[in-house]
Picture 1 (cartoon, rainbow, N blue to C red):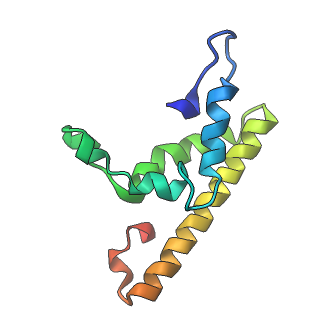
Picture 2: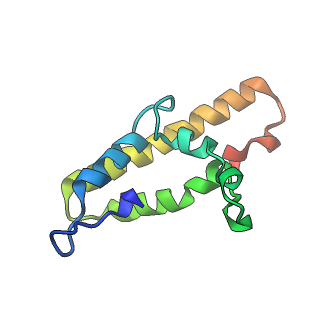
Picture 3: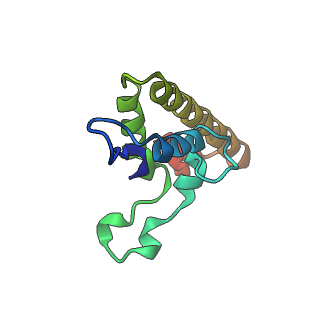
Length: 115
């Protein structure tokens, strides 16, 4: 929700104070809070009783990825650069997870990051 924050003071303007920390967190390293890997480890189904919210793992990142792709074409350069950095970070996160999975096991069919 913070990634799509709109300003309450101006029409058709982003709330940069709420958006940029989220985008910068997504573009951070895997061990930091708010990174792609950190968000993929969160199990939304354990807190919510709703069966639709039981998605966990990398699939939970899809709406955030689509939002970052949309923000690439934003007229504000700061937002587009931050979303580009976040998308680069998810590619490197995927590669890191695939490499660590291959080192741990030869059968990669159980790795959710490969789907």
